[in-house]
Image (tube, rainbow, N blue to C red; front, side, top):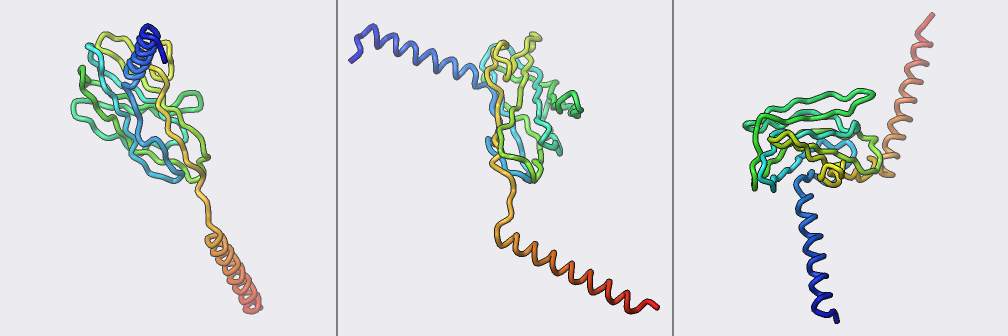
Length: 189
């Protein structure tokens, strides 16, 4: 059994861990898992737990996800920055305010290719305050903590019956092509 001072230290340590977790839990991304070939609504949820309003949100989207569209958010404008060989694709929202105690969902529609491999995707997030300071998730030095992640569940696969059906179609097309070639040869002088 812990003595009273040891219990107090234990409670203080537990409380400090809970508060640190709460301070970092200002952003979250849903869904947390996706499947290959999926068309998905991704929602970055942000809550302001500070006295300073957040006025801009920047989300870096992994290149494996094709951004199909961004959901309009009243009072906010968005800008889609296409990725290149040297830069990632980014969605920026600005023009609104996220005040203390408020939360918003910044959503976009994206598609994962059918050949996507099982792995974890990282979505770095930057929230800009009205003072100009930035809190970055994915860069612990800025106070934001770990970036939200989404896990790809695995590649799409064909069942044994699906493989058999595809093989049957391939054989059927081969026989048809052979019959047409033989028929064309017989008809030529």
